Length: 231
Image 1 (cartoon, rainbow, N blue to C red):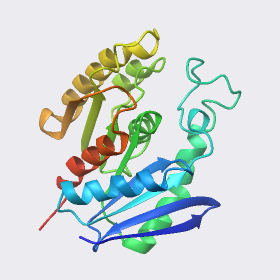
Image 2: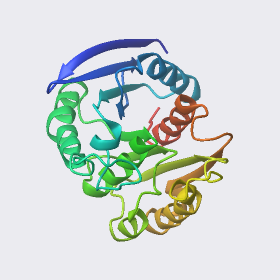
Image 3: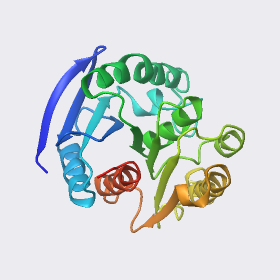
């Protein structure tokens, strides 16, 4: 399928659209300004992995460690706004970005995904609203303080969730980050009890947190996308 790319300013934020055919699903993710080439590589891999026409909408955020945290965690950022602007980011997605995207593409299933803090944000967002049909969380930062107790009492409202983690990610010296393996296993068990084992998966990837980021997220989006595709 051919892949077209364009950029647009929506609600004052730069958004990049990567479209493959007539979309059947909307893929949504936070991004950074320098990631255009990475996003193109990611979108091309989704095309190769799944016969699902899609539009990937990537919206820029100013500071990942501030704008994507659901609550403060000093192990991630000591910025005074860290943990306060996550709600504003979600409100932008729900009240500004999604209405514009739906005007363009109609009421298609929306899969919210991201890498690292972006994956955590997608999981958190899906516990706050039923606007997302699926979640694609690659190497999500579920090690932040208080996440698992929160996830236990705030189930995701999406119907399908993909989780992945690099096999080396939990073998680090940082005492906070090394909890990620155990936390993600706990997250997966919660999802199986909340959604059913057939509606979620946990994939162990080769490498550390910085290995094949675009490929991991492409595989996550492809797995969830195929669950909503109708020939």
